[in-house]
Image (cartoon, rainbow, N blue to C red):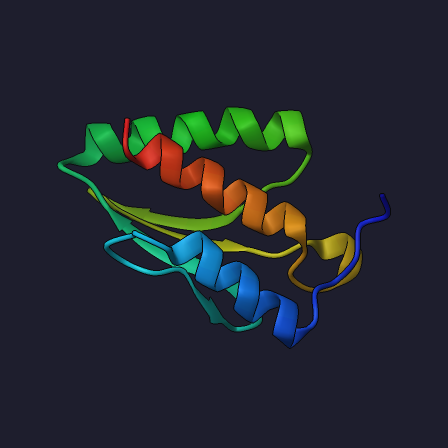
Amino acid sequence: MMLQKLDQAAITVALRQLNAGLEKDWVVEDQKLTKTFKFKDFQYAFGFMAMCALYAERQNHHPEWFNVYSTVKVQLMTHDVSGISHKDFDFAAKMEAYASI
C-alpha cells in the first residue's frame, strides 16, 4: 500500500479512534500530530524516549520532540507526504503503549 497524506475527514476519524479512552488527547498542531506526555521523573521520560527512538529507527520514521525533565512533547508528521499519514497514527499508538509501561 502506498503511503498517502490523510485528508481532514480521515484525520478526524483517526484522532477519535486514537484518543478513545485516553486521559489526555492527541491534537493536530502546526499540521502535526501532537501530544505532551508527563512522566514521574526524568528517568521515566528518558526511558520512554529511548523505546520510541528504537522503534523510530526500525520504522525509519522519526518524531520531532522536546524534553524538559519529566515532560516530553512529541510532534509527528510524514515528511514523504508533507502531512499526516497512517504511519503517524501507528507511531502515536505505539507511544501510548510505551508511555504506560
